[in-house]
Amino acid sequence: MTATAVNVAATHVGTRALGPGLRSVVWVQGCPFTCRGCMSPDWIPDRPARLVSPEALATELLSNDQVTGLTISGGEPMTQATALAETVELARARRDVSVLCFTGHRLERLREHPPHPDVPRLLALVDVLVDGLYVAGHNTGRGLRGSTNQRVHRLSSRSRAEDHDYENGPRSAEIALDGPEALLVGVPPTGLLEAFDTAVTTVRNRIAQADPGRAR
Ligand code: SF4
Image (cartoon, rainbow, N blue to C red):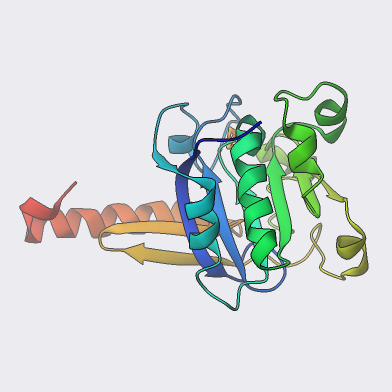
């Protein structure tokens, strides 16, 4: 299948908070799940956000020539398997980037009953897959997964050779600012999400008071 566009909720070029090395991240819009405590509820609705061609998205994600990996999250990437697979294929034609992908589906389900025809094509491109739904009660504040019920699958020989501790390593997060908008990049350490939301609300209120025309 050939894709027309990726429905993109957000991107970030160049982070060390979402996987080994310097990576670029794409979060897709739309998710069929409704995990309680989801850190990105605005990205659950299946509605048009920023529609980007795979070619343009690959160019954007590789715009920093130090980037060695891509992280795909959401939203639910598997619902956009065709466009994302095409994006990764185009990116890999230019640079041999590693791929880390988060999904709410279990790997067994993806293999036995793929929810989209191009899931096998996307899975074949993924080095590390973090699978399963987020369960707030199993969030230990450690590792590159939201909760310990989620599993880390090293699907490629490249990922099996690396020593990155996805399960229990310390978390880090970065805050990317774009005017009055702020984006939290990473799996947040305990308490950070609440502090981040409070800080964003405070800053927005101050902007609204100082310059009502800029408030959104
Ligand atoms: S699968 Fe991820 S994006 Fe979807 S509701 Fe759960 S935590 Fe949120």
